[in-house]
Image (tube, rainbow over all chains, first blue to last red; front, side, top):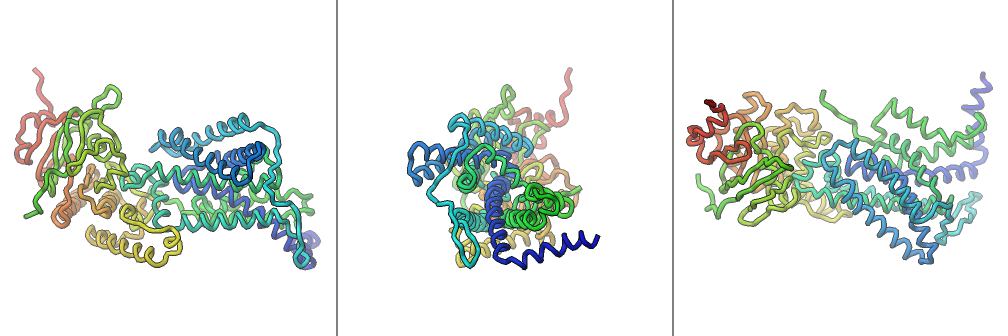
Length: 312
Length: 262
């Protein structure tokens, strides 16, 4: 018994203290993964904030953006041009979604909008496959996948670039949506379409802007994940990892998505490396979901979410 | 009372029809609302009152006829554009932002009046801070005016119905509207709440000179506070005039009490 306690509660920390450089490497890996989760979760948060809808298609949007980018690069477009075109495609997609999916569903219950995003999910998946093919593709945007060593800590250049990009993007977005005017307008739109219209908030513009921003976030997420592990259809499954991030951070909170992503990224890496051997590994695969489950029991609105208030 | 000389009616509805498929909800209705007036639109259930109001505020578009605001045609405008012109409204079944505090709800009414760069706002610095404080001060005046100081931090969804209606009125007032549209401002209220609401509506009209068009079922209230009454029945206008006249009108009595069929 005491052996077991020692192995769970003491030994891992001794290992950490014993090899600090390695610990830092693990932490960096965790922060990198966490920022990537945050990036995907952010796409969800934006749309949730502006329409109160959980956008089931966010994962596919990441895949779609990555596929478009790779497809353009394969056809010989320079990186900058391909990026610009992909942004244009995602903004165009936002317009199309507003016109075809959202506008006819104004004032409908949110579950209906949610179902519509499930439809969108399947459409985009099929459309992406039709347009760009279903093979696994390598995404090369000219950032070398090599490492350098600082004070005995190995740092991967690609991961560093991705982390910095994600951090910058996340900060900008957080600032933007934290502004009182825009923040209030978004909350208003999410809360009641009719009332928002009547006080002069242009629903259409807000939706196009928000879906465009979510599209751009999807590009960055697709770019970073794609560069790391290739562009393939499993890319849309990272949306599943974003779910626990949202539950942890709160669905309508930008800072929540960041903090939630970091907690899960770092937590699962630490768990995998230091506690993994005790249970035969694979902690990385379930850690996030168990944590989310615990949060649902204790604090269902998440760390930064709004408490749901209902008059009964 | 003296108002600045009215340069034509604030709102002019001219031969407006709204239809949903084969159903004609509003049938060639014309009415005009003069500056500074309180005009009540009454009628039995299903008479097309709310539909008419929705057409004025841009939620529906008439299939014939035109709507002019301050002399300019605005028949085809969308709700946000109507709001930008200076028409604010409340809803029959209260459309507040339930998760937001009363103060935030009323602040949303100021959104159209706010400007600014996002960077300054994000940092809550300089002009952005000043702007927020100015608008906040204005909103506090409305809060005082409507006597809802005690609930300003309460989430709107938690309030009793009567107070929610008052907060909705506050949000509409925050936009400093030229024309205020109230859809059954007193529905579901007890006598005391109704009296309060009447007083507020009259005060808004007197103190700010706001033109008001309202829909109401309570005949007593309508006769007491309005300058003019428009009666709709089955989508058609059947009477239009001062309350005392409308009260005596035979068509109105028939619509409300029913006609004996022989």
